[in-house]
Length: 428
Image (cartoon, rainbow, N blue to C red; front, side):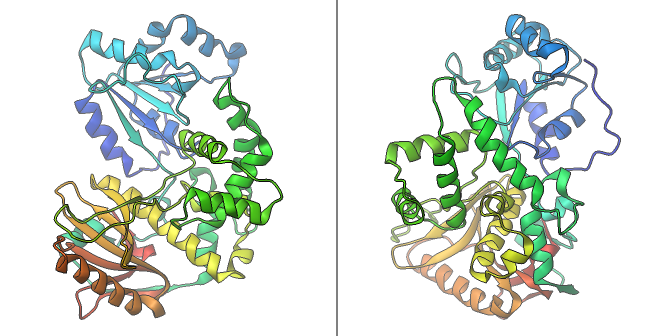
């Protein structure tokens, strides 16, 4: 099948990584939640394509992939193989294909779930580079002006700006709408529908298709997803999630059951948790090791809880957690574009930093997240205090301290050197 022309392709930050790794590896695998744009983006970088899940001809493509896997890899490179996980043997076939011809940039695999069988024969190390793709950041969707570059801030390049006031209503809309490419231009009244349909499809269809030998229970899946949504942007333990389920429903769930479902959700790329960060091995501070819970997009949590923009505005406590989730979604995407990674920080002295980006050179950046500009200086003071505590105990100082907020109209650097800026001005 020849590549479909995409004249209206909207650039994504992951484009640069895809181009880079196609020059280095024989194959890449673009992974992420359904509908985040993997196929569209991968097709943009390919010269031919094979769609495993194409329903035409009674799914003849899938049958061909099962019977003649090498045949479907033949085509003008880079060749896109979309939804490879429908035929797990394609992973090892790709590895062998890349070994055989020895050239770079041959195959682009895309997948919206990870099969259990992946890597039984070979992990693909050195041949296939996996790249995580997410929904759109505010900069990619056109909802951030991009006037302030994270890369520039790291290099101490900054110009204060004043922007039109960002209202709470706008932020509520952006959170509930999410970063789905197909939902970007939907109005306020309809913005929740796509995500609601997405999560319903996950429970009723996708979860059941994930494993042939596991019978997932729809009710249990709903209970766990609701608990994850209620605990979005927190570091609660699995035990607390189990307790939360009992508090809100008559049914209990065991540790093994919870682990099984969390693993399934992770394999479907529904989750994008923040790992804990430790400044360096010389620091004497003991760091907590709990991950901060996140759906891949805060709109997923809104969908599970049936939140509309208006409902969200009536619960500012939940609003705050979901705004933090949206900011951390964007920071994760921007960090990846800079070859960095997003973490969070908590120690046993009660010190916390909402978000930490570790850069590829080992330096790190510290971020506090506040819903409104009126709380920004309070966040900046806490950031300075925690960073001073880290350095006093032998840790490396961050190269950037920044407060990111939602409601407000200015970006500036305060007297302590902390940058204060709206999320709607930021880019990678």
